[in-house]
Length: 253
Length: 253
DNA sequence: CGTACGTTTGATCTTTCTCAATAATGGTGG
DNA sequence: CCACCATTATTGAGAAAGATCAAACGTACG
Image 1: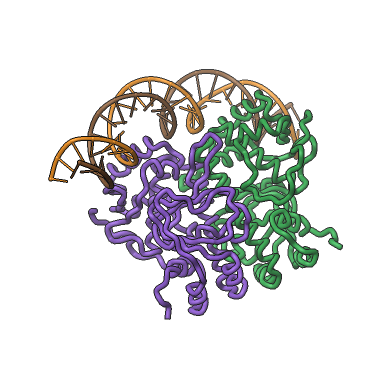
Image 2: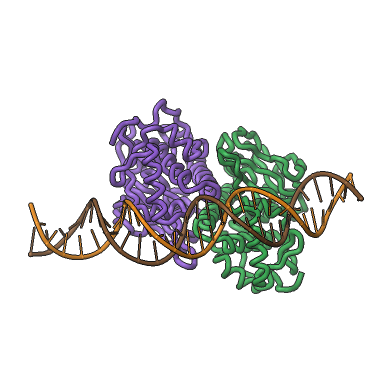
């Protein structure tokens, strides 16, 4: 029924938060789109852009970021396969932040009008898109809490937990953990810290046995311990799928 | 045409981000609702709630907040007249944060089904609600940047600038400034600082002539100076209304 | 095998927090 | 109107988390 299509990850993403019939799924997959490959560091959206298309991430990783006037950078969202890069620009006419590829990424561009039409004709899809926007806002609220009220070890642990859950929902983890190719400098921009402090903190988490690292691959030997260290409660992710007994199999890398 | 109604502020709010016909406006104002008064500190929404109604702030001030496991608090959004308190709960089934009244507030509760129906039958209204959610996310991104990458004086200045712009859009400023009845402790929970540091920082801003204070009333003698100090650029608020020549008249309190 | 980029480490400095006390302020009952 | 109380604002002194500066070490890759 559902043929393999580049838009499959979008269906999977929307379905983690809302209910979609097979017809809805088929309609999404049938959307006309143009696919483009973006190299690491390449911009997908620029602040101030007046975009004509809405886009989504088919493969790879990306992030949203903003700069202060003096040039320091803050990453305000992490995007993984299936995430809508440009839900903002479906109805807003000027982008308020940048989106940059973390790895080589495949991006599907869908005309605003097509997506808007689909949302109107298929209420379930419109609702799913709305829900996606609401979930994104929920994640942002948790990030505000993370930055405002947690110290460096908890902040990092929290981000690593969030990634574990979101990547798992997209089938991007294996029993050894997950690969997330972010430099420590970028992790610093996620957590509002300096790269030096990220380095020391990461080593601290590792020495406590809360995480294991091998290059940019992370594994979580004891999910509960990391969750506690990061004060992580996945409620804010609003994922419908049932909690699996074990998150990541606690094995060595 | 448009009778004075408790739902008027909602129309005004939605119209700052999207275009609504008179019929749309009338339809919004005609929504059935139940109004309730909440005392300062009272909860309007509690984390974990499964709400049956969506609600909006008719008068007064409120804020969204979350707690960490060890009990410290972070305010993640400020709500003023006309703001939708509960857009989340229009389509999500479990609240991920608390909403608490800052002052005595009047809140209108609208049945989820009614608002959902309106959004479906009147695409412009549905779009306006979607846009409201997107703008809220945009503000959250700016807050993440604010908390992650700005120091205490800039953080506070930024919050005061945002309030000036948003309150002005709702007609809640006068030429002397605006009244925003938040304690320094609450301001600390907004900015991720401690109350003591907020106090010192506020005094610092005042001694530099960037703000004036009288109780919980703020005035901005030199808009440009405060905007620079707070690294504030109102793009992220996505307000359609034209920039007025002067923000707040620079006069004494 | 050299270059560029990322990671790690050390030493020192700043911002912000913590703890503690004092001063205003607003509201209340007499 | 006044004394009293609770809450909020202010100030000081010392401590701590995280930033900054600087250098060395690894690793990938042409």
